[in-house]
Image (cartoon, rainbow, N blue to C red; front, side, top):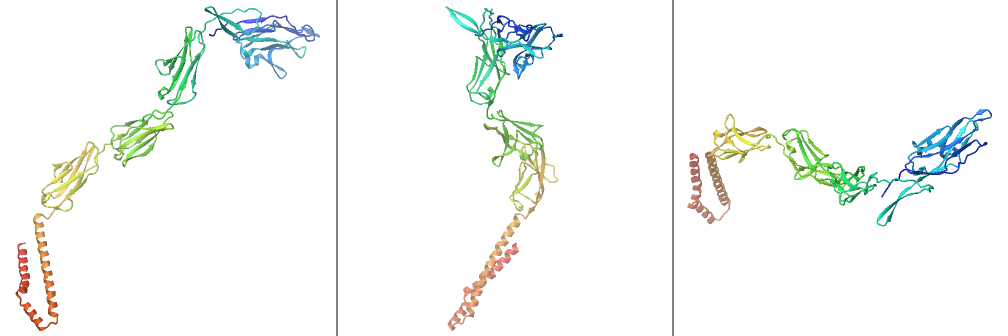
Length: 511
């Protein structure tokens, strides 16, 4: 329990001791050499001084008067210029009265106070010594017990002869302060304790508040975060309140450090995301300290870093920019990457490519597939036209001509179209030899191969016969050779080429 006693001024009155210099009418007189006063009160230190009015036909004039407690070398420091007494000292001088008044007494004001004056007669100063000793009373409340009651006694540290009078007060809180443990920054999941302190009687109740919160946060002298989180960061203050009043503390800031939370990606675009438009992607994450950002793009089945910074700007986005992206937020405590975002750029069909299946010559009567393809988003629709004809030949990516004829020859083009635009490509088709011509060519090739084979056989036989005739043989062998020449079997051999030649001529006539 803390009480305030009324401001009191206690004095012990002693005989005046004049200070004499040269003559009996020079001197300084103090009403008391010891004064006891309470802290925070105002005290008057009474004083008078005397001097001869005239010496050697020279009128005495006072040139300087002051009070002091300190010396600066041999010089007395005037209380009015002492920074410790700034604004609290007043000289109540009137004729020979040299009373000193000190306001708002402090414990440091306990000292010996002396008065000094200087005239035109002596050329020196006159100081009242010894001076007045001022003691600042330390008032304390002592609690005792009488039967079932409490007894309060006010104790004064000064030795007082006369009994002073006291006034007792209940008091509202006079201050309210907050201490934070541990001090400074703290990491997420650590323990933090805020403690509120105040005076007052009856003992105050404490309530905690957080700035920008509509309701009170907690009650009690301590606010404990056993595992502080990022959302606990902020400015807190406490209020001490009893039935006589209330006090509010200054703000205390809890600075919680934590790694980035899940980043969010926002897309800003002027209109629809079409080729050539401006598109901005912005990455943001809650982190302390602030996070650094990097952007990644899916390229060839893997993500590659493409830019650093919170924004990814496409001043004129292209179809090649269509891909999956994500951003990564990082500080010294950790990192976190965002969810994937797909950039889907809309664009008109590019120049279509046209192909023919089967490839090579187009044979009359055969089946032909014309295939058209184009890069477009959204997917293109295809229409086939023949040059100089208004009506479409077919719809779809593939145009099939099942029995190609000469009248099908010409220029064909396909048109690819979507909501963003259209584009077309031309294909030139010419029919070649038909089916019957192909049969004739195959027969001719077969006959020619057969004739070559017969001629080769005749050449072999003729070569063998020539060798036989050129050899030197016995008469009987020669006879056999003659008989062989007349053998019907060899006559047939010579007859075969003739017959085959006739057949070949007949086949050529048919052709």
